Amino acid sequence: MERTTCVIAGGGPAGMVLGLLLARAGVEVTVLEKHADFLRDFRGDTVHPSTLDLLDELGLGEKFAQVPHRRVDKMQVMLDSGIAQVADMSRIRSRHKYIAFVPQWDFLDMMADAGKAEPTFTLRMSTEVTGLVRRGGKVVGVHYRTADGRTGELHADLVVACDGRHSTARAGAGLKSRSFGVPMDVWWFRLPRHEGDPSGGLGRFGQGQAAVLIDRGDYFQTAYLIKKGSDATVRAEGVEAFRERVVNMVPWLADRIDAVESLDDVKLLDVRLERLTRWHTDGLLCIGDAAHAMSPVGGVGINLAVQDAVAAARLLAGPLYRGTLTTKDLARVQRRRWLPTALTQSAQRLIHKQVLGKTLNGERPAMTRVPRPIRILQRFPWLQVIPATAVGLGVLPEHAPEFARRR
Image (cartoon, rainbow, N blue to C red; front, top):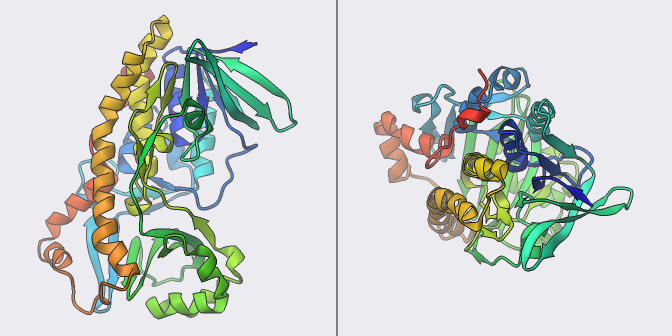
């Protein structure tokens, strides 16, 4: 039987940040990641100003600056009348007045390297959590399976579920979630970006369809929104019909749409918006997507997951180190992070209902006139700090605890 103080299921942004912070507090922590590496395409690649500030506090700002990334400091929408800017990141209160787009695997590799410098940090790749170990109703560890089929148990004072919206650890605990309906799923694909194309993030809303183009330098990471559950139906129409849809909405993509050679180049994101009613049970805590699956609206999922990890580290490092952890400590994490989660999800639900749902159902006409909120943002540009702050910093941004800071 193996043992550690804290075992983290999942080596995504929340798991790696939490693991590093707890290790810097001297807590023995083991992160179990089921994949052999972090290479996954079309995962969340946004690193927000609040996370960039956190990296500075952790002494990792210079290392991150060396990772190739694209900086986006404005958000725009494409109307029939032209392009209108709706958010200006240069106005936010942060040293980093932009969102950095970086392949998630580079970010996670950097966090893993930082963790390996701490003597109490262990990262085990190709090791999948398959269930929970219980004793007298309390979670006391996890069952795991390695890539070669070997199985085992890893016992711990605390298990933290950071294994996403399909969390095995959460399912094993039987924690219940509240699900909010969503009007769409997302198709992700890439299109070449040419000199002179719009920069930053660009949204386009047409009659019955919508898309978002994210400037990644030499290509656009493109999100095409489809009605919830319609993936099979739309795919059956074929690649030519899909190309026509995209070009009808954004005509200047006609000279590159053939880069989508087949619908195998288009990846489905099954959009969910849900939140656990209780994020913990005795011996187990859920954070990030395991506690609250977010819509891709605003690209804030990673930001919230990282903030959860920082709050959990600050509140739990002491009890874990002293061996005095109780469910009251776990409840404090949920109390700290519930409000920013609920407010963010409420904003996403409003956008789903008033904008995306109506657009995809054909209830909202094509934008021949500039909508009033956008007209206001154009007339008073200083108001663009509001959406920029909401996306870039979020509600109640967390800062690194003193024990984790490096100068």
